[in-house]
Image 1 (cartoon, helix red, strand yellow):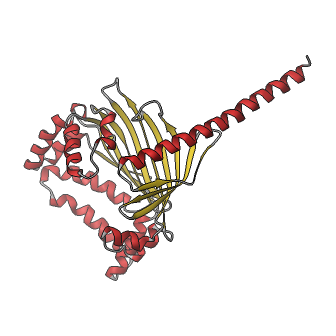
Image 2: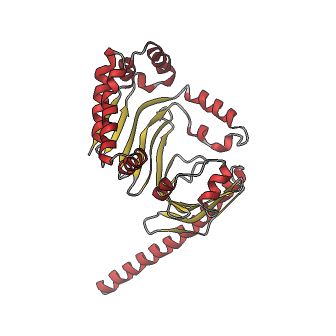
Image 3: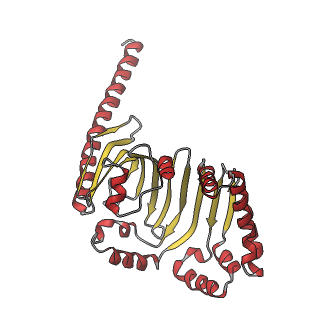
Length: 321
């Protein structure tokens, strides 16, 4: 047989497999999406859950469009829910990577605050964080669970508003089986009992590392401009005042803690210039055992020994540009 014919036949076979696999995965995604929505409806956390459509890309990324949630009369719509990775083989997934883009409130922002009994959001903050009835927020969360390694969970999460601000958290948790974080175990009508149970579980937990970061993409300028307008001063003067307050923080702590506070405040002062990321890291002693660290930290708090707290946690604060 002609080699060109063989190559052509092989390419056609591959194309059939790819297309067939694509439609198979799409069909599977539909089933899993329906199961996901059914589980949310059955959990009792929401009055009603539905969605418009589900699709899967050639790279396997599953996207649910307009996931609608109703709870106690409040309605919200997750405009895009992307599932980059999901463990379907365990009831509580051992690995997951999910993203959310855009949250809409169909009844309007005013109705949202009225229904929750909250004070209306200041107009300038509302204009910063909302576009009409939609919050253009971006969120991503992922983790990997290793039950054979002391129930280790490596996790990362971030959320933010484009061109405004973003928050990030990543770290390691050990000593608590992932099934204990399944909300279906807890009575949604008794949050106090859930908090007590979770507190007991965390008593056995270890946090060997944790990093928190706050990235400024314009929020500081907004906050300083707002403060300046409210106090009748220029934004430059508002920034200078805030820097002065942070720089003088060391004078308000015991002498033995002044060096520590000065080093931290120096990083915060750099961050206040805007357009950078403030990062806080801890790598605690004792493997991050909460049960062992808690009495030592509480004792240091009562004696005002901030240096000991920083040493126990291996606290680091750094501004990054």
